[in-house]
Length: 501
Image (cartoon, rainbow, N blue to C red; front, side, top):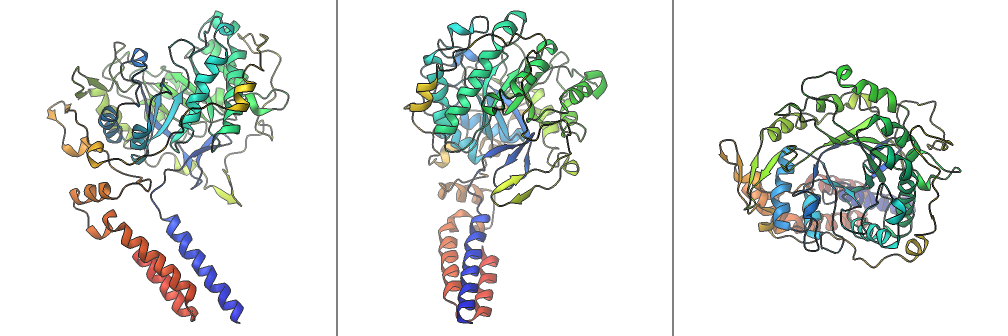
């Protein structure tokens, strides 16, 4: 009997601690791939990408001194507006891995926003030449890619990497580039396997050319000799075919569903938002996140956040860094804020088996059991016979690179507030719009979140100013469970703990 009571006390102690950790809001959970879905690695829930493409100033703004994630003041301005839009993901096309991105990535994380990051840039030795890829696929290029992975794989809110963007976009590039793209994917996945703290998906973003888009997706999906090392983990489609007021049929979305219904990897719109009709109404958002599409697609990213000469922007930035919210911003916000219950009736509840998460979805009889189709000898409109030096990256993959690991860092309260002015159509926006709301404190905030909640008028008993006292109380109650001689007393202590925490 004594051993039985001891056993029960330890069980209650474990339950106490597990309850404490399970109710922590400090973490932002990494996203993984299961079948053709993105999945929250902790909760097991499906994750839909609801985001924007972000490259303020265009590719020319990537220099030795700056990139989109190197200036915390710019990040505070834009991330507060990301939250106003209601997004959960941002795509960035180019970064300089020699710069520090800790503060901006921390801001994204506390705001609950994930990053899909392209590993190429327009600078020398940092991208594939689509017409002569053999001239650009060399150790310096791979070192650049690996430096990005080495830094950003240590941020939990890095959702995935794009190995390329629209590299194949015409007849000539389709003749030379596909095998190089597949080899870069393999290099990246091997490097991640050896040097990253967790698995991170590697994808590709395809141009809006039907002649190549489908065949390239199948080629990048396939496994060579049964090996998934060169198989893409997810696939992005840059799609601008829904313009103005259209339907599934008139836009061709119904054909997209039919074309990709058997695809074994997660699919997203890596760019969407036709601007032939202005202001954009973004009616395609409702279609993309509808029951009809979300069995095949996992969301998408609107092109693009800042206004550039191509006229796709949601926000216009002036020379002083002040922001003007354009009509497109409010149209997109209207659609994104109505997507909290995206197609839930179509998605079965995930189940757990041990430490693995299995996502139950509709059966797809033509998908191989290993989830990876065997590569074919030929793919329409593509030349896949080009030989690539697959050993070029072996040394770097084995030895690694010396770039610093990214990490979440302490932020001051003032750093969460935009120092720039933000205007809508009638004047400056309210101050609360200019402040990043902390959704995940990452365990590094004490004073900041307390100030935010006091400003919002919250009950001080629920603020993080009392977090230390709550934690001490939790430890005390767990200890009381352990030493309780009377099991009923222990149960009462457990109930009291749950009530207070």
